[in-house]
Length: 96
Length: 478
Ligand SMILES: [Zn+2]
Image 1 (cartoon, each protein chain N blue to C red):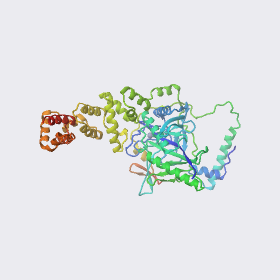
Image 2: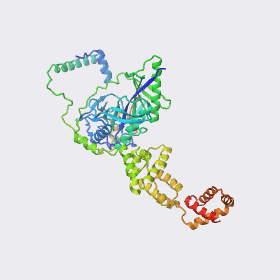
Image 3: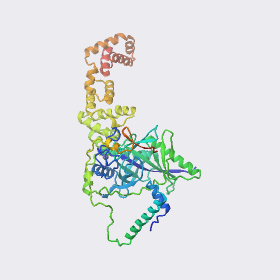
Image 4: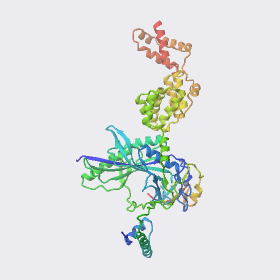
């Protein structure tokens, strides 16, 4: 079930990733993504009948924190990362 | 017109009552300045690592057990990818593949009887930030205080058939979760939010129609109106031979109509995948049993106990156990004064009346059990009469005053000095010969007027039954 990376697919991925690609970049992305998928297809040639499916990258289990406040007022630091601020808010282009 | 049936399923988001956010040690406190409760984790800074708040898992298991769900022993978090300025990571951490609870049900009761509403799943996730649109500029302001506040989303099966059933279901969830202390579940304040999935079909059909999802429902009344409105809209479309479009709609409760939200054709492709930053969760039998053993007493058991232990009528027990706060007030006050029926009366009558009058929830009650117990003692000992008691109660309801100090300060104690009362009554008799005559002529009701005059003269501080006694004595002697 090889997925074909055609122009339509590149456009769709572009929309999802909020990227606008020029002609040259599109061709390059098409090439790269096709290569990646070919690599995955190669993996499916292997016999994995006796391999337990991996559900997660990390092997650690049950890593928790207690419900205790540890963080101080951080609004100056957070706002210092904003391209623009309005008093204590971050400012972004209008969204509805 | 054909006979139609409404098919409704609910997605209910509940904000959990933890002290901190789901993946960082930021406070969840509301009403603070924008962006005070933030850190690199909940603002999605590169390299920041989320660590799960154990209390969130405990609450989710508790809600799952109380709604008869199976608890998923090995569960994990997934990333739901989308771009929106209230979502700083560009993904929301949620659960798609292995939600923590599945296959539950709750029993609801309407005028048509009892029925089960099945719960498909409950999953844990994080809330988004808040966008405030600037009226003057072409910009939006972002506050991340709410970003990362823990939520559970409770997804029902499409088992409801009317607005009445939907409200009964929401009420049941609200009560159950509030009893667990897992959330205060206030629709108006957004700590409980419900999205309604609704379709219609001809009665008797077993196929589902095309459904729409309705958002922005901020009260039980809005939910009821939105369900009626959407049912009518879909039936109209079908009767006109048109098709219902599967879409998300925004309910405008002022206009009592809905509109389709801008359809982003790409929006439904969330490309979920397991979050590699978070460890998987293994929930042992022991963990579940520990939570089960610590579940608080729920409404049905409480009701039964109130009738047996305190001898309350079923009606009282029903009303008192409806809201956790009410039940807590009842138990705490009764523990102090040991007068269960009197406590019940004050809560059911005056408290309910004032709550309704001021559009408040039981959770908003400000007076303490100690003060209610004091008031009951004052009334019981006859230190104040019943109408004064009601006045004092109202002040206590509003400002949690100490009734003993208040009665003392305002001089509201009953005139119990019989010498003083005697003098007042004698004067009233003297000044109202007509009523005295009427009484003697057999119009026993005339005494009511004289009692009223006496009460007026004592500024309401006399006990009416005592006044009545003394008056009768004098009138019969005269
Ligand atoms: Zn944080």
